[in-house]
Structure formats: C-alpha cells, structure tokens
Image 1 (tube, rainbow, N blue to C red):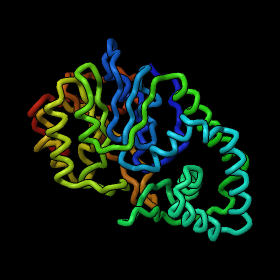
Image 2: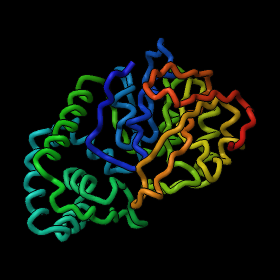
Image 3: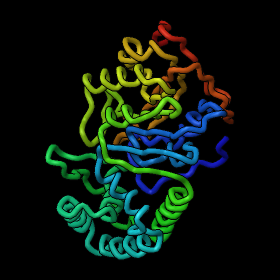
Image 4: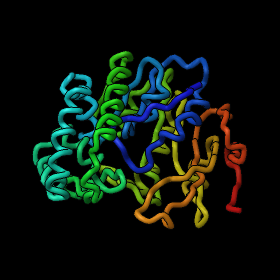
Amino acid sequence: MITKVGVPPIKSQGIKTKLVPWIQSIVPSDFNGAWIEPFMGTGAVAFNVAPRRAILCDTNPHLFNFYASIVSGEITPEVVKEFLTREGEALLSKGEDHYYFVRDRFNSEHSPLDFLFINRAGFNGMIRFNRKGGFNIPFCRKPQRFAQAYITKITNQVSWASKLIRAKEFTFKCQDFSKTIEEASSTDIIYCDPPYIGRHVDYYNGWGDDHEREIFNKLSDFKGKFILSTWHHNDYRENEYVKNLWSEHSVLTREHFYHVGGKEKNRNPVIEALVTNFIAISTERRKDSQVQYMLLEPQAKYGIA
C-alpha cells in the first residue's frame, strides 16, 4: 500500500492525487500485466499506482510532449530550475505582461518548458484550450509566484517523475482513448479518468454524451479488468449516466472535496465513484473515520439523501 503519494509537476483541476490510495487499494494483489491509461492527464495515478509496465496515453499533445521530453532527456531537474528561475525573475519584473508573453510563445512554438511555466502560473491550475488549440487560461495575478521555494518544489517533482519513468517501462502515446482501449490485452488493467460528464471540464477535446456512451461500450466489451473514475452525485444532482449506464457494473463511492472554483463558496464536496467490471472492495485505511465507502452491486438502485 502507498505510504506517501508523489505529486507530478503538471497540475490540473480534478487531479487524483488525494484519491490515489483509494484507487490503488482496489487493484488486485496478483496483477502483473500492463497498466493502461487512455486519459493520462497529469500522470498522478499511473506514477503512484502502476506496476513496472504502463502505457500512458492522451489526446492532449502538450501533456505527451512534456513527459516525452523527460524521457528523451531534454527536460531535466537542472534545466527546469534554470528555466523557472529566469522566467520567474522576468515575471516578477514585468508582471502579468510576461505571463501573456510566454503564453503567446507557447501557443506559437509549443515548448514543453513554456507549458510547465504557464501551467504553474495560470489561474487555479487549469488546463484549457480554445477551439483553435490555443491555451487560454488567464494569469493567476501572483507576480511573485516563482519564489525559490516554489521553484525547488517543482524541480523536486520533475526529479521524482524522471527517476520513476526511467526505473520502469513507461510508454507515452498521443492517441484517442478508443484506440488505446482496443490495443489493450486481457491481462492488462485499464484505468480511465475521462472528463466528468455533466460537469465543468477543462479537457483538450471536450466531452459529451457520444463520448460517454462510446467509452461505456468499449470498456463493457473489454475482456480484461477496468477501473473508471467518475462522479456519482453532489448536494444538488446525481450523475444520470451512472444510473442509466455504469450501474451495469460495480460502483464504489466515497466523498471527495475538489478545490475548484474562483470563490470558496463555489467549492463543494462531491461523491466520487470508481466503476469496475470486477467486484472490488476498498482496503484503504484512512484516519478520517467519517468517510464511508459504499459498494453498489450491478443494477443497484440509489438516490440522493
């Protein structure tokens, strides 16, 4: 069981860092196949949970380019420290104008180092692109963002990810989720963390009803094991897709709080769900005794209290 969760250098809303022990706890102890992720995102789950072999995919080319640059040696902790120190000094001197200068440069040249900079200097750790593929997150309005302690923190995260990637057999691909699922074998485990249908998402290609139904069909036909993250309900409404589609499989839930939204009053807890095609009961041990786990059997009926 994971004792300390490592944090990747790329941030995003909805990152699964705090849910890693829960996800890891339902992975069968005898699993020795490849860990497959059609939605790699920041890499938080795979870097902490995946065994020796993993295939990590995403349609966002900038996520792929960043980690591919670590594999190739283009991005190292030393390079990151020097780059963020230089750009951080410029940000402190010029303010938000420098952030938008780097953002424009990234949208033109697609440098993975610029991607890291705007990811960590943009508002609320969001990753969002316009229809033309341009990164459009505004500045976080903290010109002093890249203080030495923050640069050291990011550098250490790059070092951790770099050592882990080199120690294991990790393959990174930029491709569609359907292709990734089709390429998986029955001895693998597919972990899917698609954009949450019906909620605000900052995903490269968007996500709608057709996508949700396609991934449901693909995973339902998969001969190996899968785990899918989604939302179950919040204080205001339920995820109709869990009831109408995913309840055909096993659903495990727990409460989670996302720090999403510009104002604190807009940040609310949500009931997270892990959907699997195998009976999985979490063995996670947590200090918070108030957290309750619920296993919903296939076709179970549920409501919001």
